[in-house]
Structures are given as structure tokens and as C-alpha cells.
Amino acid sequence: ANSNGRGDDDANGGNNNSIKLGLGDFIFYSVLVSKAAMYSFTTFAACTLTILAGLGGTLVLLSVYHAALPALPISIFLGVMFYFVTRALIEPWIETIMVVPFYV
Image 1 (cartoon, rainbow, N blue to C red):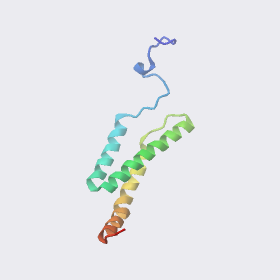
Image 2: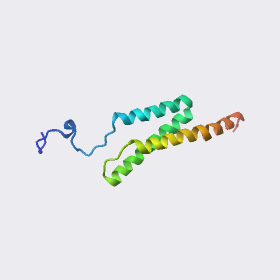
Image 3: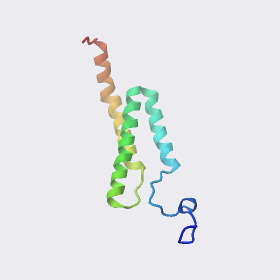
């Protein structure tokens, strides 16, 4: 037992200054990434990278503000935004590039 008499903080869910993501966060991320993967690899890659960047941004904000922050808003906003940007702009651009062969 610890000196505070409560036992192990990890086992009791105490405050141990660790970062925890709920199962719901991963469900939302996986739904977005799987929907993107159904469309194309480019949208899958864009959504995956922006979700990871959003999680990184959330961790930076967490270290700056030292307060509990929700993990979903930044990541999901960036993921959905890049999903639509990739489908509307990047995919057609890639398709036009692939029409004409480029030889080096």
C-alpha cells in the first residue's frame, strides 16, 4: 500500500498524472478512418494523419493548461475537415495527374 493508505492509484483510478483516452474516443476515430478508407487510400491517410496531429495538439494543450481536456474535438474537426478537402480537392487533382504519364 502507498503512504496515503489508499493502495495503488492505478488500480483505484486515482490521480496519477497519466493521460487516459476513453473507449468512445477510439470508436469515433475508427468510424471516421474506416469511412475514409472506404473511399480511397488518400482520404484514409489524410484522416489518419490529421487525427494523430489533433491528438498531438490536444496533448500540447494539456501540457500547457494542466487541466482535463476532451480528446475528441480537435481531432475529429481536423479529420472531418481533411476528409472533405481530400475528397473535393486532392482526389480530383491526383486523378488528373495520373491521366498523363510522367517519365523521369
